[in-house]
Length: 249
Image (tube, rainbow, N blue to C red; front, side, top):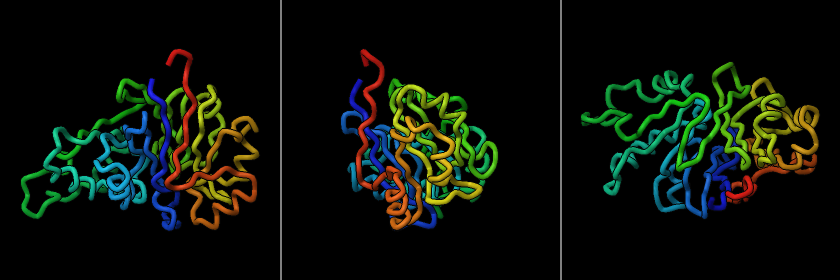
């Protein structure tokens, strides 16, 4: 199996746009295969980085700093003369209705009519997980805002990406039990929707913390505060090599 790495296009939150919307690209042998989340500026950043549209997108939840880029992505995809197939969009089934209401309430996305929003995408509702490029990705419910609202992503033996979440020690005991790199929502102090660094230190074993990269920490200054407190904090534009996987891969 080709070497994998995760490239962060942005690591910030809705109140820390100096670091860009939190979004990451899974690469195989340097080629982008899956974009995770799509804030407003993410399609432009993706095209600047790779010179193409993403082949597929996974959405963790429907807050606007994670989905508002789907509108410009619609236009980029629909008017792409080289497009041969709709862009694949993996969305956890419980949030599909809310995503429909948020993005597709209008009769037509074009003033001229004649096209539906979903015509530019292949919408794939997912529950436990999905197949993509001959790999199985687990989808796990996380603790963000309310039940069945936020979801994370795991590629066994490679990585876990939590999306926005409170601490989830019981889930990571199951989904990060094979040495996976863990990319975790975290900021200096927690709140009812996000994890704080002190909480992760209290809730997670030291072995897991050693392979954890925090992101979505808000501003660049908050990232510096977390590094000073001992956290490893993801940097926009940096690629993170992932574990090699099972023997024989």
